[in-house]
Amino acid sequence: MSILFVSATDDPGPWLRELNRLLPEHPVRVWPERGDDAAIRYAVAWKPPPGLLASLPRLEVILSLGAGVDAMLADPTLPDLPLVRMVEPGLVLGMTEWVAAQVLYWHRNQHAYSAQQARGVWQPLDEFLAQERRVGILGLGELGAAAARALAALGFDVAGWSRSPREIPGIACHSGPDGLAALLARSDILVCLLPLTAETRGILDAELFAALPPGAVVINAARGAHLVEGDLLAALAGGRLRGASLDVFTEEPLPAGHPFWRHPAVVVTPHVAAKTHARTAAASIAEQIRRHERGLPLENVVDSRRGY
Amino acid sequence: MSILFVSATDDPGPWLRELNRLLPEHPVRVWPERGDDAAIRYAVAWKPPPGLLASLPRLEVILSLGAGVDAMLADPTLPDLPLVRMVEPGLVLGMTEWVAAQVLYWHRNQHAYSAQQARGVWQPLDEFLAQERRVGILGLGELGAAAARALAALGFDVAGWSRSPREIPGIACHSGPDGLAALLARSDILVCLLPLTAETRGILDAELFAALPPGAVVINAARGAHLVEGDLLAALAGGRLRGASLDVFTEEPLPAGHPFWRHPAVVVTPHVAAKTHARTAAASIAEQIRRHERGLPLENVVDSRRGY
Image (cartoon, rainbow over all chains, first blue to last red; front, top):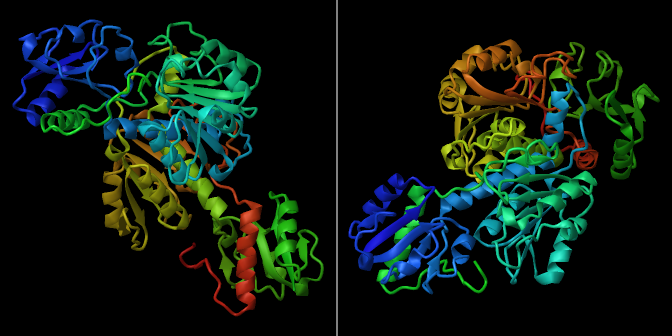
């Protein structure tokens, strides 16, 4: 009854330590080492090579190392088994902090003040209170709901949008196509925390930007493929948008010479908004494995038709 | 029974509108127009010319337009009358937002990422959760307590220090000289929100910087005179401090050619952290005037010996 750990990018050391400590009865194999394929019941994985999971005859549960499962779902050979999204406090907390940092950065004109400072210019700009700034959150899952709550606690006028109706106390929650138009029309700062699905791919495009109030700011911390990069550049060039903060990109690392690097209205961070912290995340994985073995329903299981 | 409005920097328009609306029985004179000196019972003032208030024979209460009263107290002719500090929600909210913006900016390495972006460098840095970041607040008055609460709500490990003991739920409150050393030793990010008094002038000096953990960040939103500017430059040059965010300066506007302007580790904002919003602030002034006329004790009265 072993666990296969699969990731080309995560250091397996801390994960092995934590999983061995929490689940001493389950040997952990680190791919490409696999041991006896028939002994593997659980795969703990980030972007596994296509076909790998299908080759494990007695696999029972797939546990994602990251919050997004779009890369895994893109594998047509993905076995029809429960796929558990990563939901762990460190990832949600980190994302919430990054979103709050970027919203406050634009809200308090830090981008403009830094540009003024570089030119030695002392010029107070119009300052608004958070209660006068309307923030819209696209996506009200674990990450979006946490960001919405934190921004509301900071005093912002927060609303959110999700595919299916949600209720979050203190947050105006919109849903469906009509709800999206209503949300966009009132979002001075728009934050994308959507899952990447066929429906949301390219959602941040010229049409969406045109539905925002003039001078709005767009913040994307979800997936690079949510954004049509050329449309963003055009909306910034036309003055339709004031600026953007981007943590994710179509191609990562962002290629040398990409126009975002030197763009005066774009903040680039190198995919650091939220990372899975081995210590808190291994506990979440261990909990789901224990639930499975006790016959309890798994939590945070992906609905493969919805894509999240 | 008139009110004298005195400010060389505030547009009197919105104040007149609000004060006339809230206190229709009291004519408002806008300095240098004074009307009948003997009719003036209240002065609503920001940096009044020295001697002006002393020349009003029947003045009863002085109401400051700003939170800081150090400029007013520096006038040796200041009459021995109740001096009311400005405490109004807009000022406290604005300051809290600015402090949260700057703390998150340094916490999430935004300064370093912006420098990397300018060079086209994709390099994730060590990221910590807010709960792993110790923030220290100097000053636990209205502004400091609000900032401490907001930062604790964002997950930071917050402690504070004030001259006399304070209690704020969820915040470790230190006081007195020993308390200051304890606070500094655990402050990865130090925020100054102290009143400016003889005791706090120049408190942000080489000795204080040496008591912070190596690589700490200093944020000053109180008064320029709290900071010994040369000591900050030396602590940054020596690598003792990682950076600083400054909204206030010994001389404002910050003079052309001042080393802060082009310093790679200093964020300069042009005294915009908190401004008094006429609408909310006029209500606070009107309330104190009404309390005075009903014989109720005034609130937020400055203790001139303490200086705040």
